Amino acid sequence: MNKNAIFPDGAEKEYDNVVFEGLSLKGKTISSKQFYNCVFKGCDFTGTAFMSCKFSDCKFESCNLSLVKVTGSSFASADFKDSKLAGVNWTAASWPRVKLPGLLQFVNCVISDSNFLGLSLRGARVTKCFARGADFREADLSCADLTHTDFTDSLFGKTNLTGADLTRARNYAIRVSDNRVKDAKFSMPEAMSLLYCLDIKIIRVQDA
Image (cartoon, rainbow, N blue to C red; front, side):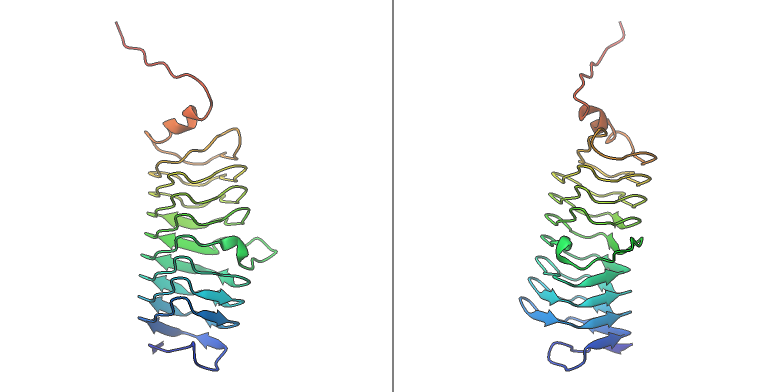
């Protein structure tokens, strides 16, 4: 791999097996570039606009992508680790018509206040993350790994959670009557919140 390659001012449109390290493009606009098997380490893309770009089998490690714009850009097997991606509108990206599993993977990331409304994220990985205030309504999260993630104030409605693993996930508010949860995995005590969303009264009875 080539290290510390700089792409913003270059004429190249396609990058394959390149490592970008310590790159800062805050607020910049990057258009029509394609990245294959690239690695981004410690890069600052805060507010960067990736317009009609393609990321295939790319990894982002310890990067800041908060408020990044992904209009018309595509992601296939994109892995994010130890990174910040708060306030990202993922619905603006270009998604394949054929529903492919594992398009996005987040591990130990901040994806709070991001929009995943209606997206097909079957088999996605969102583990050990902060997903506070994120919108997952009408999204397909079937067979997704959502373990150890904080979903405080996140929205679930008509969400497909079939076969999803929410073990050790916390602070979620999921109405079982409004979401598909067949074969989904939950762990106690967090799973008690599923009962609270049923609008029933739970009475604590002490043995005499």
